Image 1 (spheres, one colour):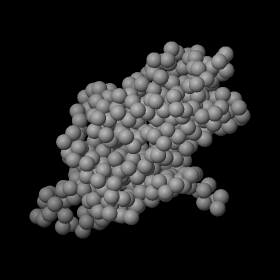
Image 2 (cartoon, rainbow, N blue to C red; image 1 turned 45 degrees about the vertical axis):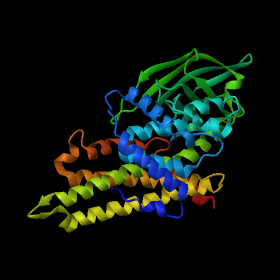
Image 3 (cartoon, rainbow, N blue to C red; image 1 turned 90 degrees about the vertical axis):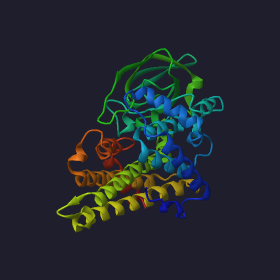
Image 4 (cartoon, rainbow, N blue to C red; image 1 turned 180 degrees about the vertical axis):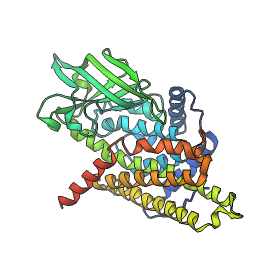
Length: 376
């Protein structure tokens, strides 16, 4: 059983403790799932999370970031694919929640019920961390826009019902000339050019836009506001990436504690060896420190802070990097079992690596933090 004493920290309220209890009961009954058919499993997970009411907080006018973090941490601890399915519903609709029109927000009812799957289409072959270098172009075409370009590493690519797409509209140079569009999956000109496989399988794709026409009403926010929209969405959801890493780390620590208690070595329990105790202590320290940073960032946003760029960057950087170390120690403590395909710590070892890259790689987070410090 994972340590839940963090639920009593002042960052969280009674509603969060109730949410944790309900979600834990659901996870015990529903997870993990069979990952043989990733697409089908993700689609079903979104439907089940929606029918259970756990997608309600992923979209809307008032997003409770602490709830998002708590849900991602809990789901990740039980099943990384369930965390993925949940997270993309929030990230994919974040721009609509924060900047969408009333007509655009009608999509949110479907995504919250798990009836529609969303995707966030920002990354391109030439621009990952450097968003200002986007090459996808949206040119004025009569009463709308015509999009041409390509996106890659798009989560839910190929199974999504709607895509939030960022493109260059040319109001200014670099970041000043980007805009954001809502693109339903059936829009003519949208192509799924390649399905991408990674060390921990998730639905990922390379998208193409070939003379795709969109009405002016498809634009989210105003022309040239795309960079601000993207950063605002990441400001909300970046902390939740740290929460997912925290869930992976907690599971690795739990598995390591069980291993230390049950395994004998040199005529004594593994738990009695001082070197093993040292590893366990470092793992527990990293887990608690990561939790403090994650829930501080979430609490700060929920208390009304306009931006939490620094706090969210710290939470994501520390939680993902330290979770990698926690899981690596777990593999070491499990010996041969730790690298056996299908073992929990082996799957965690594959799951954690991507979190140090997407939504801002670790080195980018260091730049964000340093710039924030230097600007004070």
